[in-house]
Structures are given as C-alpha cells and as structure tokens.
Length: 401
Image (cartoon, rainbow, N blue to C red; front, side, top):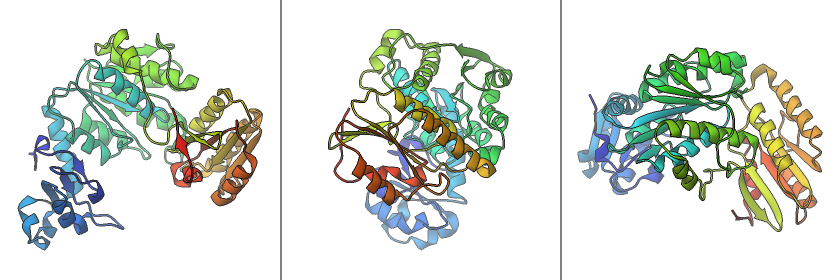
C-alpha cells in the first residue's frame, strides 16, 4: 500500500536546496549528509510532505510535525510507492539502457512522443535506484507516455529497475565497455543490459540496431516482437556524429511503433538539444570548445574523438582527454587504446589529464591549453565526470547554439 499519493505533491526531492512549494521532501540518511537535518528547512521552504524515518519522527515537534510521513525506510518507501503507482498509470512505459547513448536515445524518444501525447521522462540522468522511482512518482496520472532511462554499474541493477518500472517497450542503445570492472566482459554487460529485454511482456516490443556489437545475443533474450533498426531515420539528425544518427533512428523506430508520424518527428527536432555537459559548445575568445564531460568509457571516448575529427574547423583541433573510471584491471589497456586512436586522428595537439592517462593535472592542462589555442581553433574536452574537465571553462565563457 502506498504511504503517500504521488499526484498530491508538486514533485519529489531529496535535496533541500531544490525544494519547491507543494513538493514532497524525502529525508534520506547518507554516509556524509543526513537528510533529516534539513527537514525543518524543507518545510519552511514550502514542502507539503516530509518523508522521514519512523524512529526519527520524534525529533520534529514544531509546525513541521503535521507534514511528517513516518516510514521504516525512506528509500524503500519511495521504491515501493513508485512500484505501486506505476501500476495505476495509463501511460505506455518505454525503458532505455545501454553502455553509451542511452540519454541521447531517451531525449530523442521523449521529444518524438511529446508530439503524440502527454509525455513524462527521466530528468537528466536520474537513472539509478533512487532517480528512477522519483521519475515514476513525478509522472502525471494522465500521461500517455513515460520514458525512463536505466543505468547500471553492478550486476542485478537493471533487474531491480525493471521490477519497478515494468516497461512495455525497451531500447538498448549500445553494448560497450562502461563499468567493465564489475561485469568482466562485454558479454557480461550485454547480459545485464539484456535484462530489460527479458522483462518485456509478450505484447510489448524491443528496439535494437544491427550496429549493436551484441545484436544476436540480445535478440535471443526477447520473448516479444523485435523492431530491428538497420539504418538512418528518414530525416536529418540535429546532432553531430554517426552514433547520434543511430541513436535517433532507435528512438524514431520506437516512437513510430507508438503512433508518431514522420511529420510529428520532424517538428520534434526543431531546436532539439541535449541536457548537461553532453557535446555542449562554448565559445571563448574566438575558440570553440566542445564539452563532453558528463561521463566517459572507452567506447564513448573513441566515438567522441572520431566525431570531433569530422567537425568543421577553420583552425587547429585540440583534444583534452581525462581519465576514465571503473575499468578494473584492464584500465591501462583501455587508456592505451584510446591514446593510440587519438594519435591516428591527426589532431594538432592532444593533452592527457590524470594518472590513468599518464598525464598532467587539470591546472597544468588549463595553463598549457590556453597558452596554445588561438581564434579559429576547436577544442574537445572529454573525460569521466569526476575529472571535472568542464572547470577549464569556468571563467569568461559564453554559450552559443
């Protein structure tokens, strides 16, 4: 039974800085920050409901006490409520996962479906065991479509997520080497991601591209109809790179199955862009920077390098590459392979940042970079999020489309 009713709240937050009037604030206990410390603050900022651990409820005796929702475990309450609420939704649920490109596929899919009906989708990359329940809880009860992104870095996580979302359709963007430290092989990654396809109901459908490295293995996992994507969509992709043309084609194949017409899809692409630091173009003193620093793995790193090499550029091309994480015992091998590929692309300069690349510090990279570049040059910044390469652009930048 649900401990609270999602439609009664204007969103769900666990960060008191993001509280808005009428929302539900979930006081999550953490190893460094305990959300219960911010319950009163959240209430004063307008939170309508305060989800707290039952054994902590007695700490709150002020006016906020009337808004308390005591539960044995806050995270578990969010999960179970989301699972129950999902069952009440009329929306067709599309689940999306993959080693690289899943956020792009999600954004394309949601954009297409919005042309057909009321659509709710994962915000940013709220794709884990906390973000996905919140995405579901924030879905309007009258939504026609719900598009959820599912991430994983350990075996069993996709099974947990599909158990909450119960998707009607699924898309796997790619199988690469992300988080290979925990899955050992690409087949292991495919088996984990493929859990999405195994979970789909017989009346549902799976979308899979023939360019997927584990196409045959993934197709065998399906007990439902498989929509095979063999090439590009019948309209131009607004994002650079062959990989994005495939990402859009996957989204289009799914949307088409759900009733989106080509005219609707074309309308959806007007002004289309990706959220966050995903191929974000920034201009500084005549130099064009492409910040792709949200995340990185060997597959996405090589794709970014090849896409950057094909980008129009009136001056010189410079790549600044930072360490990739969660690659396990083969980390050195993967970093060496990326370096080898970078050296074959004839960039005018490559700067490596971090211990895994055997490179310089971020501050040293910044000094070297800005001493070198001049107007007309283009610079790619690519690394795992924890490397914070986007900080190279903190001062004096202006975004442009």
